[in-house]
Image (cartoon, rainbow, N blue to C red):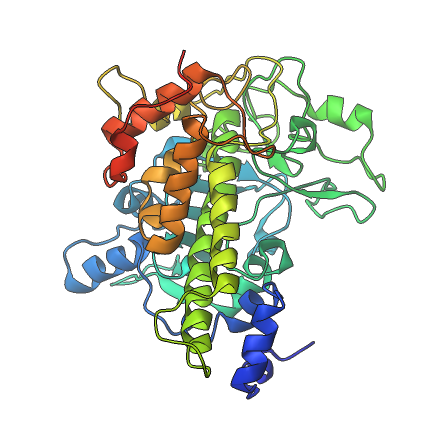
Length: 446
Protein backbone atom coordinates (compact mmCIF):
# COMPACT_ATOMS: atom_id res chain seq x y z
CA UNK A 1 0.00 0.00 0.00
CA UNK A 2 1.27 3.49 -0.82
CA UNK A 3 2.31 5.45 2.25
CA UNK A 4 0.25 8.65 2.15
CA UNK A 5 2.60 10.51 4.48
CA UNK A 6 5.52 9.75 2.16
CA UNK A 7 3.58 11.18 -0.75
CA UNK A 8 2.65 14.27 1.24
CA UNK A 9 6.26 14.99 2.17
CA UNK A 10 7.60 14.77 -1.39
CA UNK A 11 9.01 18.15 -2.37
CA UNK A 12 7.49 19.00 -5.70
CA UNK A 13 8.71 22.16 -7.36
CA UNK A 14 6.34 25.08 -7.65
CA UNK A 15 6.40 24.71 -11.39
CA UNK A 16 5.25 21.09 -11.19
CA UNK A 17 2.36 22.08 -8.91
CA UNK A 18 1.24 24.64 -11.47
CA UNK A 19 1.67 22.18 -14.35
CA UNK A 20 -0.44 19.52 -12.61
CA UNK A 21 -3.12 22.06 -11.84
CA UNK A 22 -3.28 23.64 -15.27
CA UNK A 23 -3.59 20.39 -17.19
CA UNK A 24 -6.65 19.69 -15.11
CA UNK A 25 -5.68 16.75 -12.91
CA UNK A 26 -8.05 18.03 -10.27
CA UNK A 27 -8.75 14.54 -8.93
CA UNK A 28 -5.08 14.31 -7.93
CA UNK A 29 -5.44 17.09 -5.39
CA UNK A 30 -8.10 16.01 -2.86
CA UNK A 31 -6.78 12.58 -1.92
CA UNK A 32 -3.19 13.71 -1.49
CA UNK A 33 -3.59 17.27 -0.31
CA UNK A 34 -6.10 17.24 2.51
CA UNK A 35 -3.14 17.14 4.89
CA UNK A 36 -1.40 20.01 3.12
CA UNK A 37 -2.17 23.72 2.97
CA UNK A 38 -4.76 25.07 3.10
CA UNK A 39 -6.73 22.15 4.64
CA UNK A 40 -4.41 20.36 7.11
CA UNK A 41 -7.27 17.96 7.81
CA UNK A 42 -5.70 15.95 10.63
CA UNK A 43 -4.47 18.90 12.69
CA UNK A 44 -6.90 21.72 11.85
CA UNK A 45 -9.41 22.87 14.44
CA UNK A 46 -12.82 21.27 13.96
CA UNK A 47 -15.87 23.55 13.79
CA UNK A 48 -19.12 21.67 14.16
CA UNK A 49 -21.89 20.76 16.58
CA UNK A 50 -19.79 18.02 18.24
CA UNK A 51 -16.84 20.35 18.77
CA UNK A 52 -19.18 22.85 20.40
CA UNK A 53 -20.60 20.13 22.65
CA UNK A 54 -17.08 19.13 23.63
CA UNK A 55 -16.44 22.69 24.81
CA UNK A 56 -19.63 22.70 26.88
CA UNK A 57 -18.60 19.42 28.49
CA UNK A 58 -15.11 20.74 29.24
CA UNK A 59 -16.45 23.85 30.98
CA UNK A 60 -19.08 21.93 32.94
CA UNK A 61 -21.89 23.80 31.21
CA UNK A 62 -23.50 20.43 30.48
CA UNK A 63 -22.85 16.75 31.09
CA UNK A 64 -23.72 13.41 29.55
CA UNK A 65 -25.75 10.93 31.58
CA UNK A 66 -25.07 7.20 31.44
CA UNK A 67 -27.72 4.50 31.64
CA UNK A 68 -27.14 0.72 31.88
CA UNK A 69 -29.05 -0.17 28.71
CA UNK A 70 -27.79 2.39 26.19
CA UNK A 71 -24.79 4.04 27.81
CA UNK A 72 -24.54 7.68 26.77
CA UNK A 73 -26.76 7.32 23.70
CA UNK A 74 -29.95 8.99 24.90
CA UNK A 75 -28.06 11.81 26.58
CA UNK A 76 -25.89 12.41 23.51
CA UNK A 77 -28.91 12.54 21.20
CA UNK A 78 -30.55 15.04 23.51
CA UNK A 79 -27.46 17.28 23.61
CA UNK A 80 -27.11 17.17 19.82
CA UNK A 81 -30.84 17.75 19.26
CA UNK A 82 -31.32 14.49 17.34
CA UNK A 83 -34.83 12.99 17.49
CA UNK A 84 -35.09 9.34 18.48
CA UNK A 85 -37.66 8.95 15.70
CA UNK A 86 -34.82 9.31 13.18
CA UNK A 87 -33.67 5.78 14.06
CA UNK A 88 -32.80 3.53 11.12
CA UNK A 89 -31.29 0.06 11.45
CA UNK A 90 -28.56 -1.57 9.37
CA UNK A 91 -27.50 -5.20 9.77
CA UNK A 92 -24.73 -5.53 7.17
CA UNK A 93 -21.26 -5.80 8.68
CA UNK A 94 -19.98 -2.60 7.09
CA UNK A 95 -18.91 -0.50 10.05
CA UNK A 96 -16.14 0.12 12.58
CA UNK A 97 -17.75 -2.30 15.05
CA UNK A 98 -18.72 -4.94 12.49
CA UNK A 99 -18.30 -7.77 15.00
CA UNK A 100 -21.27 -6.35 16.93
CA UNK A 101 -23.57 -6.21 13.90
CA UNK A 102 -25.86 -8.94 12.56
CA UNK A 103 -29.51 -9.38 11.54
CA UNK A 104 -30.23 -10.16 15.21
CA UNK A 105 -28.26 -7.15 16.47
CA UNK A 106 -28.52 -4.36 13.88
CA UNK A 107 -26.66 -1.10 14.25
CA UNK A 108 -28.86 1.93 14.94
CA UNK A 109 -28.23 5.27 13.26
CA UNK A 110 -29.77 8.56 14.38
CA UNK A 111 -29.43 11.91 12.63
CA UNK A 112 -30.46 15.51 12.22
CA UNK A 113 -29.43 18.04 9.57
CA UNK A 114 -25.76 18.13 10.58
CA UNK A 115 -24.74 15.10 12.61
CA UNK A 116 -25.11 11.30 12.59
CA UNK A 117 -24.75 8.93 15.56
CA UNK A 118 -24.20 5.19 15.20
CA UNK A 119 -24.87 2.81 18.09
CA UNK A 120 -24.28 -0.94 18.36
CA UNK A 121 -25.79 -3.12 21.08
CA UNK A 122 -23.14 -3.54 23.76
CA UNK A 123 -20.81 -1.53 21.55
CA UNK A 124 -17.51 -0.21 22.83
CA UNK A 125 -18.12 3.27 21.48
CA UNK A 126 -20.74 5.51 19.92
CA UNK A 127 -19.69 6.54 16.41
CA UNK A 128 -20.37 10.14 15.40
CA UNK A 129 -19.89 12.02 12.13
CA UNK A 130 -20.66 15.69 11.67
CA UNK A 131 -20.81 18.21 8.86
CA UNK A 132 -17.90 20.52 9.63
CA UNK A 133 -17.72 24.19 8.70
CA UNK A 134 -13.96 24.01 8.07
CA UNK A 135 -13.19 20.37 7.29
CA UNK A 136 -16.28 19.25 5.40
CA UNK A 137 -16.83 16.17 7.57
CA UNK A 138 -15.36 15.23 10.95
CA UNK A 139 -15.51 11.90 12.80
CA UNK A 140 -15.61 11.04 16.51
CA UNK A 141 -16.05 8.20 18.95
CA UNK A 142 -17.49 8.37 22.46
CA UNK A 143 -16.44 5.59 24.82
CA UNK A 144 -19.48 3.79 26.20
CA UNK A 145 -17.83 2.78 29.49
CA UNK A 146 -19.01 4.89 32.39
CA UNK A 147 -16.63 7.81 32.95
CA UNK A 148 -16.66 10.87 35.14
CA UNK A 149 -16.24 13.28 32.23
CA UNK A 150 -17.01 11.51 28.92
CA UNK A 151 -15.85 13.48 25.86
CA UNK A 152 -16.15 12.71 22.12
CA UNK A 153 -12.68 11.98 20.69
CA UNK A 154 -11.89 13.03 17.15
CA UNK A 155 -10.80 10.23 14.80
CA UNK A 156 -8.89 10.61 11.56
CA UNK A 157 -6.99 7.65 10.13
CA UNK A 158 -9.32 4.79 11.11
CA UNK A 159 -12.43 6.53 9.74
CA UNK A 160 -10.84 7.90 6.58
CA UNK A 161 -10.01 4.40 5.33
CA UNK A 162 -13.65 4.19 4.20
CA UNK A 163 -14.93 7.74 4.47
CA UNK A 164 -12.21 9.36 2.34
CA UNK A 165 -11.98 6.65 -0.30
CA UNK A 166 -12.38 6.96 -4.05
CA UNK A 167 -16.15 6.69 -3.49
CA UNK A 168 -15.99 10.23 -2.07
CA UNK A 169 -13.35 11.38 -4.57
CA UNK A 170 -10.78 11.60 -1.79
CA UNK A 171 -12.83 14.06 0.28
CA UNK A 172 -13.92 12.94 3.79
CA UNK A 173 -17.65 12.30 3.68
CA UNK A 174 -20.53 10.02 4.55
CA UNK A 175 -21.49 6.78 2.87
CA UNK A 176 -24.74 4.82 2.44
CA UNK A 177 -24.42 1.40 0.85
CA UNK A 178 -26.94 -1.20 -0.25
CA UNK A 179 -25.82 -4.80 -0.69
CA UNK A 180 -27.04 -8.36 -0.25
CA UNK A 181 -25.97 -10.15 2.92
CA UNK A 182 -26.12 -13.61 4.45
CA UNK A 183 -27.54 -14.72 7.80
CA UNK A 184 -24.54 -13.32 9.67
CA UNK A 185 -24.78 -9.96 7.93
CA UNK A 186 -21.72 -10.59 5.75
CA UNK A 187 -21.84 -9.11 2.24
CA UNK A 188 -22.25 -11.72 -0.49
CA UNK A 189 -19.16 -11.65 -2.73
CA UNK A 190 -21.14 -12.50 -5.87
CA UNK A 191 -23.71 -9.76 -5.33
CA UNK A 192 -23.59 -6.15 -6.49
CA UNK A 193 -23.07 -3.31 -4.05
CA UNK A 194 -24.77 0.06 -4.57
CA UNK A 195 -23.90 3.44 -3.20
CA UNK A 196 -27.29 5.08 -2.84
CA UNK A 197 -28.74 8.59 -2.74
CA UNK A 198 -31.98 10.20 -3.93
CA UNK A 199 -31.22 9.31 -7.56
CA UNK A 200 -31.11 5.56 -6.86
CA UNK A 201 -34.10 3.45 -7.95
CA UNK A 202 -35.92 1.99 -4.97
CA UNK A 203 -35.15 -1.48 -6.32
CA UNK A 204 -31.45 -0.87 -5.54
CA UNK A 205 -31.92 0.56 -2.05
CA UNK A 206 -31.60 -0.71 1.50
CA UNK A 207 -29.89 -4.05 1.04
CA UNK A 208 -28.59 -4.92 4.51
CA UNK A 209 -31.05 -2.52 6.17
CA UNK A 210 -34.33 -3.02 7.98
CA UNK A 211 -37.20 -0.97 6.55
CA UNK A 212 -40.51 -0.31 8.30
CA UNK A 213 -43.28 1.30 6.31
CA UNK A 214 -45.26 0.82 3.15
CA UNK A 215 -44.30 1.49 -0.46
CA UNK A 216 -47.16 -0.18 -2.31
CA UNK A 217 -45.93 -2.28 -5.21
CA UNK A 218 -42.53 -0.59 -5.24
CA UNK A 219 -39.94 -3.18 -4.30
CA UNK A 220 -36.61 -2.64 -2.53
CA UNK A 221 -33.78 -4.73 -1.07
CA UNK A 222 -34.60 -4.02 2.56
CA UNK A 223 -35.46 -6.68 5.16
CA UNK A 224 -33.81 -9.32 2.96
CA UNK A 225 -31.37 -12.00 4.10
CA UNK A 226 -29.95 -14.54 1.66
CA UNK A 227 -30.71 -18.14 2.53
CA UNK A 228 -27.21 -19.43 1.94
CA UNK A 229 -26.93 -18.77 -1.80
CA UNK A 230 -24.19 -16.88 -3.55
CA UNK A 231 -26.70 -14.23 -4.48
CA UNK A 232 -30.30 -13.62 -3.38
CA UNK A 233 -33.19 -14.49 -5.65
CA UNK A 234 -36.55 -12.85 -6.17
CA UNK A 235 -37.95 -15.32 -3.64
CA UNK A 236 -35.52 -13.92 -1.06
CA UNK A 237 -36.75 -10.40 -1.73
CA UNK A 238 -40.38 -11.48 -1.43
CA UNK A 239 -39.56 -13.35 1.79
CA UNK A 240 -37.84 -10.28 3.18
CA UNK A 241 -40.97 -8.39 2.37
CA UNK A 242 -41.84 -4.92 1.25
CA UNK A 243 -44.52 -3.19 3.32
CA UNK A 244 -43.15 -4.47 6.64
CA UNK A 245 -44.51 -2.54 9.60
CA UNK A 246 -43.25 -4.63 12.52
CA UNK A 247 -39.77 -6.08 13.12
CA UNK A 248 -40.27 -7.85 16.44
CA UNK A 249 -40.19 -11.32 14.84
CA UNK A 250 -36.75 -10.60 13.34
CA UNK A 251 -34.82 -9.38 16.40
CA UNK A 252 -35.51 -8.07 19.94
CA UNK A 253 -36.78 -4.57 19.09
CA UNK A 254 -37.19 -3.76 22.80
CA UNK A 255 -33.39 -3.47 23.04
CA UNK A 256 -33.52 -0.31 20.89
CA UNK A 257 -34.79 3.21 21.57
CA UNK A 258 -37.69 2.63 19.16
CA UNK A 259 -38.97 -0.44 17.24
CA UNK A 260 -38.74 1.38 13.89
CA UNK A 261 -36.42 1.71 10.91
CA UNK A 262 -38.68 4.19 9.19
CA UNK A 263 -38.77 4.21 5.38
CA UNK A 264 -39.21 8.00 5.28
CA UNK A 265 -36.19 8.48 7.55
CA UNK A 266 -34.19 6.25 5.20
CA UNK A 267 -35.21 8.35 2.19
CA UNK A 268 -34.18 11.54 3.97
CA UNK A 269 -30.92 9.99 5.18
CA UNK A 270 -29.89 9.07 1.64
CA UNK A 271 -30.69 12.52 0.28
CA UNK A 272 -28.89 14.19 3.15
CA UNK A 273 -25.72 12.13 2.81
CA UNK A 274 -25.47 12.99 -0.88
CA UNK A 275 -26.09 16.69 -0.23
CA UNK A 276 -23.64 17.05 2.65
CA UNK A 277 -20.96 15.23 0.66
CA UNK A 278 -21.33 17.66 -2.23
CA UNK A 279 -21.23 20.64 0.12
CA UNK A 280 -18.12 19.23 1.82
CA UNK A 281 -16.41 18.67 -1.51
CA UNK A 282 -17.35 22.13 -2.76
CA UNK A 283 -15.88 23.75 0.34
CA UNK A 284 -12.60 21.83 0.36
CA UNK A 285 -12.02 21.94 -3.40
CA UNK A 286 -12.72 25.69 -3.47
CA UNK A 287 -10.24 26.33 -0.68
CA UNK A 288 -7.63 24.23 -2.47
CA UNK A 289 -8.31 25.95 -5.81
CA UNK A 290 -7.94 29.40 -4.24
CA UNK A 291 -4.69 28.28 -2.62
CA UNK A 292 -3.40 27.10 -6.00
CA UNK A 293 -4.44 30.42 -7.50
CA UNK A 294 -2.53 32.30 -4.81
CA UNK A 295 0.59 30.20 -5.43
CA UNK A 296 0.21 30.50 -9.19
CA UNK A 297 0.11 34.28 -8.89
CA UNK A 298 3.65 34.18 -7.48
CA UNK A 299 4.89 33.12 -10.91
CA UNK A 300 6.60 35.71 -13.13
CA UNK A 301 4.11 37.83 -15.02
CA UNK A 302 1.29 37.24 -12.51
CA UNK A 303 -0.07 39.70 -9.94
CA UNK A 304 -1.59 39.19 -6.52
CA UNK A 305 -5.35 38.78 -6.68
CA UNK A 306 -5.38 37.89 -10.38
CA UNK A 307 -7.91 35.19 -11.21
CA UNK A 308 -6.68 31.92 -12.64
CA UNK A 309 -9.18 30.38 -15.07
CA UNK A 310 -8.18 26.86 -14.05
CA UNK A 311 -8.97 27.62 -10.41
CA UNK A 312 -12.24 29.36 -11.24
CA UNK A 313 -13.33 26.50 -13.49
CA UNK A 314 -12.70 24.05 -10.68
CA UNK A 315 -14.83 26.15 -8.34
CA UNK A 316 -17.66 26.37 -10.87
CA UNK A 317 -17.62 22.60 -11.35
CA UNK A 318 -18.02 21.77 -7.65
CA UNK A 319 -20.57 24.54 -7.27
CA UNK A 320 -22.59 23.15 -10.14
CA UNK A 321 -22.69 19.74 -8.44
CA UNK A 322 -24.21 21.45 -5.39
CA UNK A 323 -26.79 23.29 -7.51
CA UNK A 324 -27.99 20.22 -9.38
CA UNK A 325 -28.29 18.11 -6.23
CA UNK A 326 -30.01 20.92 -4.30
CA UNK A 327 -32.69 20.93 -6.99
CA UNK A 328 -33.05 17.12 -7.04
CA UNK A 329 -31.96 16.64 -10.62
CA UNK A 330 -32.18 12.93 -11.52
CA UNK A 331 -34.27 12.14 -8.43
CA UNK A 332 -35.78 8.66 -8.69
CA UNK A 333 -39.51 8.78 -9.43
CA UNK A 334 -41.85 7.32 -6.82
CA UNK A 335 -44.64 5.21 -8.28
CA UNK A 336 -46.94 5.12 -5.27
CA UNK A 337 -47.47 6.39 -1.76
CA UNK A 338 -44.66 5.99 0.78
CA UNK A 339 -45.67 5.90 4.43
CA UNK A 340 -43.50 5.38 7.50
CA UNK A 341 -44.30 3.77 10.83
CA UNK A 342 -42.91 6.32 13.28
CA UNK A 343 -43.36 10.00 14.02
CA UNK A 344 -40.28 10.87 11.95
CA UNK A 345 -42.11 12.57 9.07
CA UNK A 346 -44.03 14.88 11.44
CA UNK A 347 -40.97 15.54 13.61
CA UNK A 348 -38.84 16.39 10.57
CA UNK A 349 -41.40 18.70 8.97
CA UNK A 350 -42.00 20.53 12.26
CA UNK A 351 -38.44 21.86 12.26
CA UNK A 352 -39.38 24.42 9.60
CA UNK A 353 -38.80 27.24 8.75
CA UNK A 354 -42.08 28.22 7.06
CA UNK A 355 -43.10 31.18 4.96
CA UNK A 356 -46.19 33.35 5.45
CA UNK A 357 -48.29 30.80 3.53
CA UNK A 358 -47.14 27.98 5.80
CA UNK A 359 -44.91 26.37 3.15
CA UNK A 360 -41.57 24.75 3.95
CA UNK A 361 -38.81 22.97 2.07
CA UNK A 362 -39.30 20.23 4.66
CA UNK A 363 -42.84 19.41 3.47
CA UNK A 364 -43.08 15.89 2.11
CA UNK A 365 -44.74 14.69 -1.08
CA UNK A 366 -44.03 10.91 -0.84
CA UNK A 367 -46.21 10.04 -3.83
CA UNK A 368 -44.21 11.03 -6.89
CA UNK A 369 -41.10 12.48 -5.23
CA UNK A 370 -39.60 12.95 -1.78
CA UNK A 371 -40.46 16.60 -1.09
CA UNK A 372 -43.33 18.79 -2.21
CA UNK A 373 -40.96 21.64 -3.09
CA UNK A 374 -37.85 20.19 -4.80
CA UNK A 375 -35.08 22.25 -3.24
CA UNK A 376 -33.04 20.79 -0.40
CA UNK A 377 -33.68 21.98 3.14
CA UNK A 378 -29.90 21.79 3.65
CA UNK A 379 -29.59 25.18 1.98
CA UNK A 380 -30.30 26.42 5.53
CA UNK A 381 -27.51 24.35 7.07
CA UNK A 382 -24.42 25.75 8.75
CA UNK A 383 -22.35 23.64 6.34
CA UNK A 384 -23.87 25.50 3.38
CA UNK A 385 -23.49 28.87 5.08
CA UNK A 386 -19.79 28.14 5.72
CA UNK A 387 -19.02 27.62 2.02
CA UNK A 388 -16.43 30.07 0.67
CA UNK A 389 -18.08 33.07 -0.94
CA UNK A 390 -16.60 32.22 -4.36
CA UNK A 391 -18.54 28.96 -4.65
CA UNK A 392 -21.62 30.12 -2.75
CA UNK A 393 -22.02 33.05 -5.14
CA UNK A 394 -22.00 30.61 -8.05
CA UNK A 395 -24.65 28.44 -6.36
CA UNK A 396 -26.95 31.39 -5.66
CA UNK A 397 -26.59 32.75 -9.21
CA UNK A 398 -27.31 29.40 -10.85
CA UNK A 399 -30.27 28.70 -8.55
CA UNK A 400 -31.74 32.06 -9.47
CA UNK A 401 -31.20 31.47 -13.18
CA UNK A 402 -32.83 28.03 -13.10
CA UNK A 403 -35.72 28.93 -10.82
CA UNK A 404 -36.63 32.05 -12.80
CA UNK A 405 -36.24 30.37 -16.21
CA UNK A 406 -33.29 32.57 -17.11
CA UNK A 407 -31.27 29.40 -17.77
CA UNK A 408 -32.12 26.63 -20.17
CA UNK A 409 -29.19 24.25 -19.90
CA UNK A 410 -29.99 20.76 -21.18
CA UNK A 411 -28.68 19.27 -17.92
CA UNK A 412 -30.66 21.59 -15.64
CA UNK A 413 -33.69 20.20 -13.80
CA UNK A 414 -36.98 21.20 -15.36
CA UNK A 415 -39.93 21.89 -13.09
CA UNK A 416 -43.27 23.56 -13.56
CA UNK A 417 -43.54 27.31 -13.20
CA UNK A 418 -45.61 26.70 -10.06
CA UNK A 419 -42.85 24.63 -8.47
CA UNK A 420 -40.17 27.17 -9.35
CA UNK A 421 -42.19 30.11 -8.12
CA UNK A 422 -42.99 28.38 -4.81
CA UNK A 423 -39.30 27.65 -4.13
CA UNK A 424 -38.31 31.25 -4.87
CA UNK A 425 -41.06 32.62 -2.62
CA UNK A 426 -40.19 30.26 0.23
CA UNK A 427 -36.48 31.10 0.06
CA UNK A 428 -37.14 34.85 -0.15
CA UNK A 429 -39.02 34.74 3.15
CA UNK A 430 -37.01 32.13 5.03
CA UNK A 431 -33.40 32.19 3.82
CA UNK A 432 -31.21 34.96 5.28
CA UNK A 433 -28.34 36.28 3.20
CA UNK A 434 -29.80 35.89 -0.28
CA UNK A 435 -28.18 38.23 -2.83
CA UNK A 436 -30.11 41.41 -3.64
CA UNK A 437 -31.00 40.23 -7.15
CA UNK A 438 -33.25 37.58 -5.58
CA UNK A 439 -35.59 40.44 -4.70
CA UNK A 440 -36.21 41.33 -8.34
CA UNK A 441 -39.38 40.07 -10.10
CA UNK A 442 -39.25 36.51 -11.34
CA UNK A 443 -39.79 35.54 -14.94
CA UNK A 444 -41.35 32.48 -16.46
CA UNK A 445 -44.24 32.53 -14.00
CA UNK A 446 -47.74 31.59 -15.10
